[in-house]
Length: 532
Image 1 (cartoon, one colour):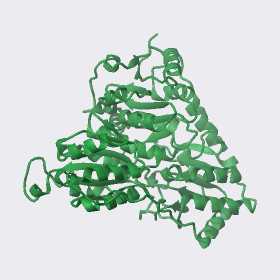
Image 2 (image 1 turned 45 degrees about the vertical axis):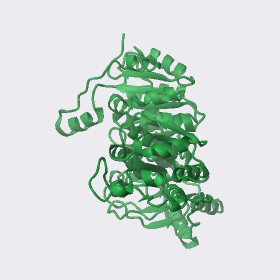
Image 3 (image 1 turned 90 degrees about the vertical axis):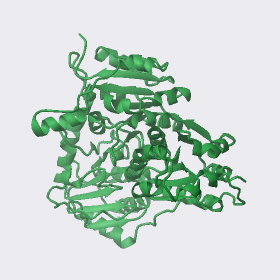
Image 4 (image 1 turned 180 degrees about the horizontal axis):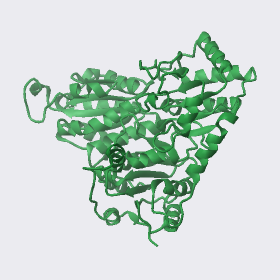
């Protein structure tokens, strides 16, 4: 078959449903091969949007999302989304077109070394220079992208190779590579540490959500009464409705979870990535006894130097610890963290006063009430992300999607598209005005696909998180102020229902109406204002 047909047949064998991307001349054969397949090609308005869609698809499903772009500027526009997938541990396969092999040895139009460019931000990437290796290359790209810890891979597909003919056929898929069960001496040592500890505490990281670790973690917490705090990307591994949940590792105004960690005499981290949260915030003196449970060894860092590392399958490790704890009376003391838990819950559930100005924190209780437990919230990056991470109770794994490895602005709207395609649940994309306008054009993609989700825009005409940091450091701000179009009119120009509520009652009513609706909607919340 033609080489481009083989590549698409390999994608079908991998179970790919959607390919997100921007067309280009060098992708011509690939695009027509996609047209003849069962895969839906989704033309996006920007390659970054395509990469974010593939990124969030991978986060939500565990199966690699696929994005495509042409050579040169198409490939460079993918970089941010590809890097986000790698640092956020989301499986993604990027495919880029390239000029013919006969011109790549010299300077030529739009030609840059894309493979070298993507090398630092992918787990594996390669050029397909021979059509007879397409089946192996695609299988490897998906295998590497999806096994723990997942991330991005990349294949470059020159246009002349795409047009060649090959006798190769797609390779069969296989079960994913699985980490081994934990070794018995390591589990014995962990049980000894837990038995000796008076105030043990668990930290649930991204890996606890990404793997099958959530249920055995919940079982362990139920059995032992150990408190658990989640990272931003570990939200929902244990339900925040559980009396043992301390919600999220915090910073800024909310310090209760960090105070609990500092008071603990043993911290067990589960699927924790220090790229997401610097341990210096909760282990400032490097004096905490730490057990690291993950699929990879811990990074070498003074503030995170575990006394014990268990490198194994997370679910199997937690089940082994749970079973051993069930054999003895492993129930812990809840008095030492109960008041902290109550203070956290009181803070995140407090309703604003009727005359209070609009705030992100004040909005979240209304949003939580409008969303079902298994609805999905996609958060962009900005000052609102910090409030969502700390104040939005999350009850199920993978229902609050936050980028906190690369922490990338602009992910919410394209992420909403991917989430709407990947799940039957209602989806809300929460963003600030800064991140919103970075990829707001993907509203066109959403309406073209008949997506139905809610975009929540917190508008302060500013890069608010940077302003906050500048004022903390210097007492003033500079270079952060923005001007915005009429966001309601902007959304309506795409045929999207749009609202700008004038007070808290209006906001609650709007959220109750639009969040469960199958139609697209945008709600602008002008921060710092409320009509009387």
